[in-house]
Length: 276
Ligand SMILES: [Zn+2]
Image 1 (cartoon, rainbow, N blue to C red):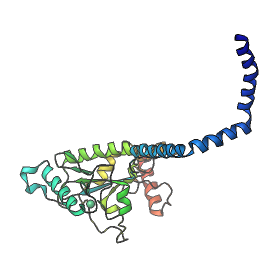
Image 2: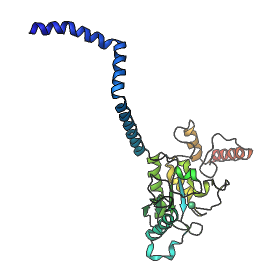
Image 3: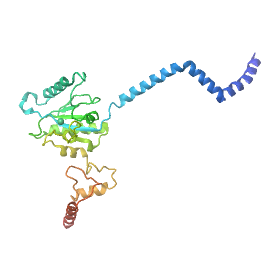
Image 4: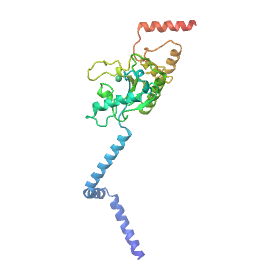
């Protein structure tokens, strides 16, 4: 019996081996398998594709490019029972839900976060979904909207609210890889309805935007010169000496032309620094 098996193996194995390595045979087998299992394979690959898309969707719900800052333009001081801002925050969201309930039944709020005067942060619209916080549809799709309670046309921002804002923005910047130059005020976002620079004053003239950006900059001299900027050491050195100051809004604008006025000022500051 063993002899028979050995004989079969001796003859059979080379035949099976040569067939398996024969390209034509492999193609015939592949065509056969496709004919038999083709539809099932199609369905399987469909299911795999759907699952992959779903997992990709979970990983990256939407591309967040900007963080847009607003004020509520409400006078919080009138309501002493709502110092934290929970009630006014809820009213703002209720109004938004009422407005959008037909188009978006699950809509929660026009902002993703609301920050009260005492520094309390309220989560509003889920971050995975856009909120209609600007009149720019495209900007809404790729941004997070943060509303600071209060009317910063009239009042200054309390330090607790300021610090809570900085902390939240810092977390979001890290999580969604948003650069400092993409932290915008509502009024910086050009409307796609009127096609003019925005007509809104939001978040108000007293909103501490520049201070907020300074607090977020973490030692970077300017928003547009990060650690990868080739002359970062020179820029830092000259800024510390007060010889260069940027455009007054936190930007160095390294690629722009310099004016005679600016050259004169820089020369003056250099001479002054040498005299001291
Ligand atoms: Zn606004």
